[in-house]
Length: 240
Ligand code: SF4
Image (cartoon, rainbow, N blue to C red; front, side, top):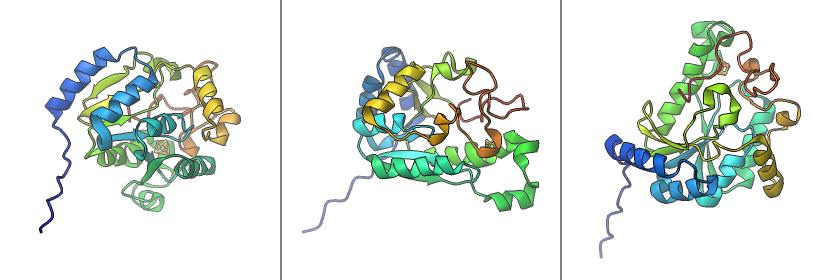
């Protein structure tokens, strides 16, 4: 007896996904993180990826409860703090997720050889493009939606972020389940569920990126003001 051919899962096209984003963006505008992730898990299944910077594991934890084994994407730029890599490893060890370590095309020595050392200090946008933006775009291919831990309270630039939206750049649905959460809600969730947190948070870094581009916040009330200090740049470009 011959076996039935296994049906290959194929992502839906942009037009269908945009319609989903438009419809559910309105419907879930004020939904809780649990409602958003329950919907995303049933709507997208294995077509959902979670991006995490490993400041904490709140989003991977929430997503893994809605969709055990969910893919978690970590952009390993080659410039991360040891504490961030440790947090990534703890998340992979403790949570029901599939951790995918996403690396740039060029290693740091290869980038140095081609573009000069410490490109981040001369042209951080080019460095972010090669080490974050392009690798993420490549990693997201084949998914229908990605979930991020963006919060409106992160910075003024994120104050109007939607819960569910169409992501034009990646031609997929973008889901921001904890967009309305306050710092207190994050802290309460961490305490209640004992999820891994980057040790740097305790040392005064509420927003953690690459080592060379992350200082403690310079301005009270703006968690991202320590990123790319000395440059007008405030976002790596992943969310624009
Ligand atoms: Fe390069 Fe800094 Fe961007 Fe990291 S955050 S990719 S080191 S410019």
